[in-house]
Length: 138
Image (tube, rainbow, N blue to C red; front, side):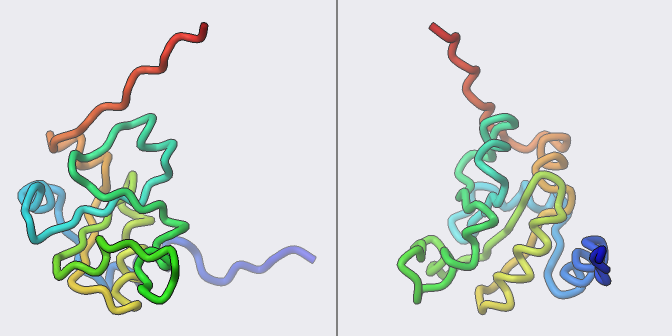
């Protein structure tokens, strides 16, 4: 029997954006480098290797988010215990809306996500560390 998916990803992201703060990329760029803000990159490591990263951003793969936030797990990361604002981003702003919603529901606050994600950040001229070029095969 085929599956009957009743809630689309579009609906999930729209619901998340009604619950969490969504920052315009220009506003997010202004937060870069501030001591009271943690930029959280939830992209897959392969995306970072391919596209680059925001200097100083904390990388937390989306699949580990809940475990790294929860101090009750042995996966917990101290970055999520800080009294700071957490600004999530992904490649295009969809996964980060869901991540910010989850983090907020878990009790992390304040949280936000970047509309348009890393792609918008790069297009707007935000600082980017480019990936290392691949090493030639011997």
